Image (cartoon, rainbow, N blue to C red; front, side, top):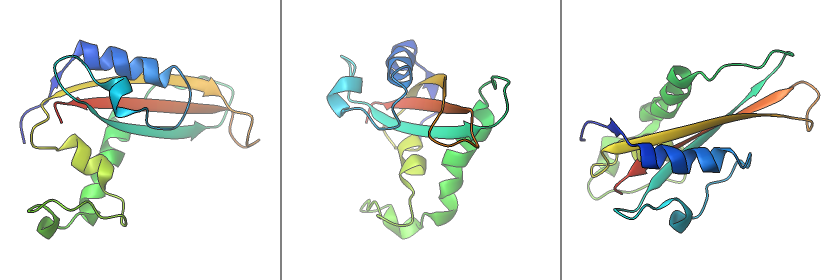
Length: 129
């Protein structure tokens, strides 16, 4: 794995995705940049209370990485992505050819469940894939 570096273009594209407040991956063509194709991780967190939360990047990235406990080394060569347990967030972040990352964040009110007032949406784009 290469060391990741921040990429402002990937961050801009990720922020545009987050700003839509839709918890779905966008199409691969929608997030690609001119130089390379791009992979994506998205995560949400439901929040209670009346105070707007601040983004908790450390906890969010850690939760994506924590899928490592469900990933078996025998899946590496040749790479096999299991349907269950879910490990796609982990493998996306550690993809061998990826060395750039950019992320976006938004928070919006949530009326689908009275227990939660807000939903945070985190989007991270990785490249090249």
